[in-house]
Amino acid sequence: MNPTVLKITVLLYPLGAGAMAINVFFLSLLGSWLGLAVLSTTAAIIIGSAIAVPLTWLFARHIKSLMDEADEAAPD
Image (tube, rainbow, N blue to C red; front, side):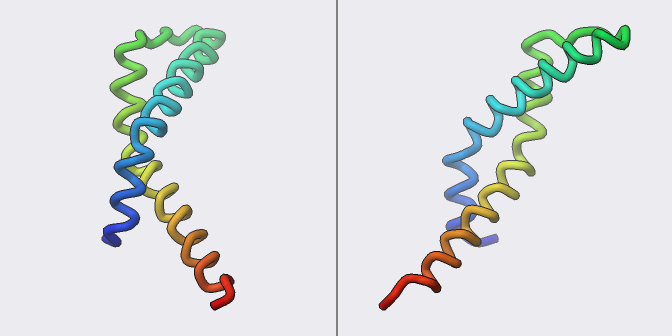
């Protein structure tokens, strides 16, 4: 694994975990329209934190590729 991607992942993880926790909670609210149970905030945070690990890593890889592309396009 690229050390830069790892650093970006660690820095962005709190943002990703929070965003995923909110998304999971809102998805459970939508599921309540279908008769499913609404998740507690604790459950949403736990599930969102777990989902955020691979998604934040993928996003960090994307950010690193954009950084590499910008470096190649920059005039010397």
